[in-house]
Length: 323
Image (cartoon, rainbow, N blue to C red; front, side, top):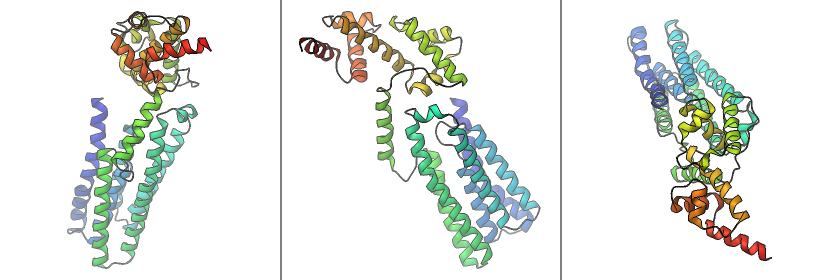
């Protein structure tokens, strides 16, 4: 996790370092940066932010694309290319990046029906607006280069700088900006709640994580190791011959649950089976039979998964029996 955060920071730091680096390049080449070159520089710095990954996306490819785009801009400046060429190159790179990302995301069909795809879809939809703003601002830069009026060009620099600040805030807070914090939290909260309505089942995919998750489902259904009250993620990692970090990621991605939530899902599923056989079971006995340490944790997990307490569920079974 620390490595991921470090790489995320690297992308932001690269973006923040682009502007002074390009200005220094202009000073070396032009001795004094003009309004037109400053306008292009801010746009190129903005371009790095547009290559920033959304949630659940690998960070390293984004960093590679950002580094490549920076090298291209510096190379074009040293070759004495006209100002419009870095702008068009940046637009082409951003469009290529999003095309590649879209094709990769929709290549794995089963993940599109995963509950986590809800927030990914929201991010993608909101990102369309940000990319559109980026492309429109590029058209503004091109217009400023064609109309060499200092007032117009410095005004363009101001607008590009404002857009850069907005985009930097977006990637720093990992938000969409357009929806607002409250609406984003409402979507994420609804997504988390809907997770517990999803049945845990085999995944129809040949990916490594899918095969590992299918092995987890097979072990949980066949061996029922979750009935042990001290069953841990390390125990499951040994049964699946993998490490706990990769195992946790596979469980989270394919079930939308963490390890404890997955174990409680199977424990409650087993508790429901026992209650259907004998609805007169005492709750303390039932919780111990299902692997829970306390009745309190059993009641909380049962209500979270079944939307009612175990006592209420037992009473509903008795009512069904009388009808």
